[in-house]
Length: 171
Image (cartoon, rainbow, N blue to C red; front, side):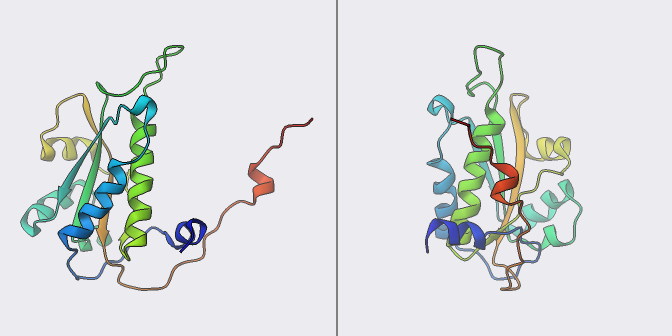
């Protein structure tokens, strides 16, 4: 499958089957995040994997959605603000940018492996921080529930046209 086709197949899965995900497939998704580019190659991320059913049950308290509870695996993508590159001119911290690139790589790798994900940012950060016992400089940025989609129908994507978002430099 070419890249554009893969990107078009990726969507926010909000219904998961109960089929377990093998450790090999989870590691394949994690490897895609590990090799993602980052500013100055600082790689300011950490990935926490929650896959044991009793741990998943407790972790589900960070985001109260029925569909979220269906996922057999959760990957919490955390950013280490002490390891991130900070732009000298204005001090901009690139932790979120770098973590987002890693997350995008993981969502595409999951799609390529026949798995589904949903990029979750609207979770209880403090509950997540407490559950994972994170120090102050480590921020839980997003959660990727991971599993096999319950349905095989890919919804139509609604995206702006290139003409609406691209602005060509005039010569």
